[in-house]
Image (tube, rainbow, N blue to C red):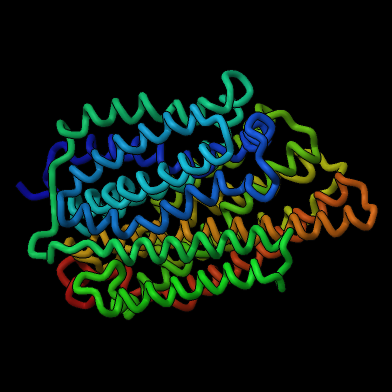
Length: 478
């Protein structure tokens, strides 16, 4: 039976979407709980962001390896392995009793998510025929990604306020186990036959190590100083590992990232947009959560409820975006989304120490919510434009990688800028709330710049004809 006629494909999509939502939620659900976790486990300000960025780094660093494993070993099998590991490491995170234990659990969670996530997209890519039906299916997953970040911070507030921050991790266990029981019934096995049985583990390790050193160097520069031997040595180590990664990719029989892939203009442009998209979204949620709790004095529950404006707007706009992509195309929808995100970040640059939710946050939240829905849906489609079944795992893994890597790097950059500005002001005698607010505003300005770069990539790199190729022409042209 043709994959497009599989009568279980929509039920399978629903199941995959639930599992994928669990992974997406864990990227943002911890933000609201950060102050509580910091108090309970004794995190330093510099190490606190590793709860978010550590997860994103291993997630992004091993996604391509996870996609390759799915193509070779079987996408359903690898999906189930990742799902079981994710639930197990979520349990470990919930029982963490020290900063080190929680960071390690988050690193392992990210690696498990990297095994699980690309299989979701590649299963969908081969289950639905290219065209309007696949666009609709990928649009649903894009809607999950776009709304999941906002829904995560809302749930994070509820769990932290009423049952404890540990439950932001424990909630994954019943979801994971339930999905594991249903996967064999609704999801068919698939793999890319004829590929060499080789895993580029060295490539995954070197690129992940390089990114971790880069983020560590950025975050520690606040205390050590940019000109210190520690900072210079760490950044030099990151550069050396990245050079080693590129050398490995050029010589590998089955490289993690075939560099020739980037000759394809539209998928490459989509990945540039995804990098900037992750950069803006991760840093924005991190900083807004701290602003609401540390400056405005919101509780965890109030902070989570405040994000309801983004959550609801993102869900509605994702559905609208999906319809608009089919009607007017990917490029105009994505350009609109990035413009709205830039506008939301620009609005946040005016936050004040005596701010209010309605005046300082709500208009920006609405802009960001629509921007999320109008960005995640079309960028997911553009990244897979003209990609055949044999490279579905690579393409889907790559767009997820760029979003997570962008998120980790963006969080490190924005948090470092905010912390440095705040500490300089505190040292000069500025009142704490004013110093914090000025630091957040400085970081939001940088976020605006990243969003505008993604907008430029959308306008200049995505080609309309690539996004409109029929199924039988697209693979050959690519």
